Length: 242
Image (tube, rainbow, N blue to C red; front, side, top):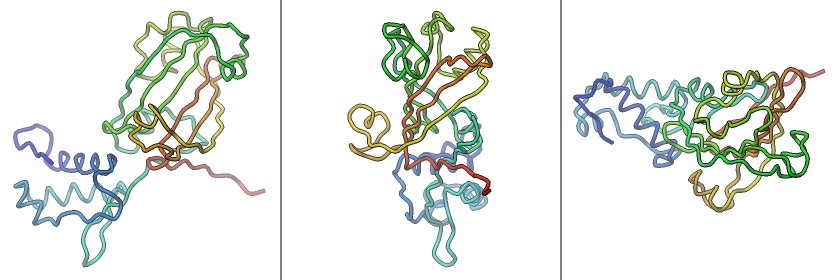
């Protein structure tokens, strides 16, 4: 852990973000005991007020918990996603106090596979753009997504930068404003390159979400197959009992 005393970034925030990053990466595991305020002070030369503020923020964000007479422990705070809401990755991470980023792994024009044909109403041989992206929070891999985009509605979209909101690209560049999004959730295991990209061991369980985005006229513009880390996400919904 490095604290830059000369940085314009507040010291408490540097400490807070470094602890959070270590928790998300798994360097600090749930149940681990953090150093005491005195140990932090001796190690990094920062005041007790600064240390306390960083730890208080992390307690409030459910990354840490205090146990009377024992100390401060890691409490792994998962990212909560409400399945009732159509909430983009970037907004979801920001609401959790995390810094989102996206790595575009590939984007190319291909023939629609069976999944895209069914979801997008296409025929065998129809062309789509296959987009693979790795989504990260505080530089920690969170989700691996594959998106299939109709080229007849979004010609040349593979030439776009595509590391930000795809739905905004649909609207701003092609006049296609997303109106509705449907999703199906299941649990699967992961292996190979996908596991490596997400920083997981072979056969680790992950959430698999398959979704379709529709325009106001009912046309499907894109579909997705996304893998969410089950150790980082809490997928939730609430229903009314009738």
